[in-house]
Image (cartoon, rainbow, N blue to C red; front, side):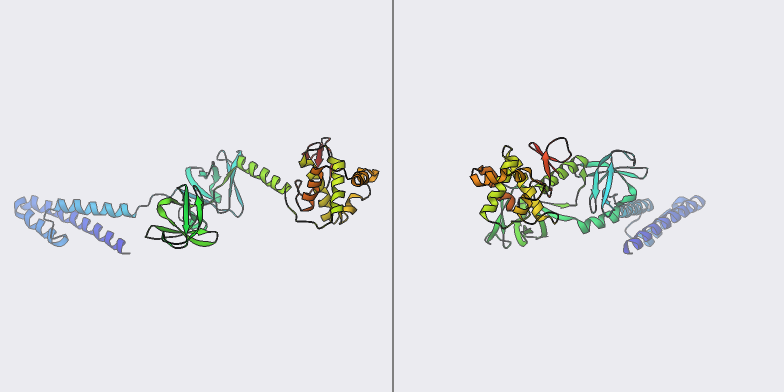
Length: 359
C-alpha cells in the first residue's frame, strides 16, 4: 500500500508540474516572460520541492522517479514449470498428441520453459526435452509454490573427502566422511560458515566452502532411460530373495540331484534357475509345500519319475555347483522371479537361460 501511495503521489506531482508549466507559458506569452517566469518557477518549487528551482529539472526528476518505481514493480517471467498431474504426463517430441513420446514427467516433477506455442510448452527436465500440454502444467506463482513444497535443498561435496561433524566446529567429533559428489539434504545454513545436513538420520555439520548448495526438484525421464530402468527392475525381480527355507542336508542334496539331472551341463545361472523354480512351487499354494513333494509330484519332473534323481542322489556324485545352487535357492535366492515352469528352449516366450526357457 505504501508503494502504491508513493507512486500515486509522484504521478500527481508530475501532472501538477505539467499544468503549472503550461500556465506559465501562457502567462509569459501574454504579459512578458520576464515578468512571470521567475515568480512561477519559485512558486512551483515551493509547492512541489523547495530544493528544486527549475521546472524542467523537476519534470525530469519526477519522471525518473516514476520510471524507477514502475521498474521496481516489474517481475521477470518465471521459467519454472511443474507437472500438474496425479501420476504421469507424457512429453512429446512435437507439440501434438500424435507425436512420439520423448519421455514422461511424474507427479511433483518440474523443469525449465524453453518455448511456448499453441497451448503447448517445450520444457527441459533433467535429460528430458520435449513438449507438454499446458493443460497439465503449472506456471509462475503456482509452479513456484508447488516447487517450494516438494523440492529439497541439496549439498553436493566438491572436495575429495569431507568430514561430517557432530557440532559446527572443527574440534567436534566426526560422524563419518563423505566423498566427492556425495549429495545429502541441507537442513539449515548458518552464518558462521557451517551447514547442517542430514547424515544417516542425524544432524551433521559440514563447512560451506567444501559443498555446492542447490535447490532440486524431481526431473522427468526420457523413453530410453525408462526402458533401461524397467529392464533393471526386471533383472532385480528375477534375483529376488524370498527368505530362507528350513530343511535338512539330505533334502538339500535331493534338490541338488534334481538340479544336476535337469541342468548339470548348464551354466551356474541355469542351475540356480532350476532350484528357484522348485522353491517357487514350494511357496505356491498350487503345489506341495515341501521340496520332496514338489520333486516327486506326478507328471512334473521327468528325471524324478524315471528314477534318475534317486540314482544320482544315492551315488553321492553330485557337482559342487549344483549343491551350491540348491543351497542358494533354499536360502531364498531366485534369478527367475516367481516363475514356476521351465522346458528346453523351443521358441516359447519366456526367460531364456542357457538351453532352457522359464515361464
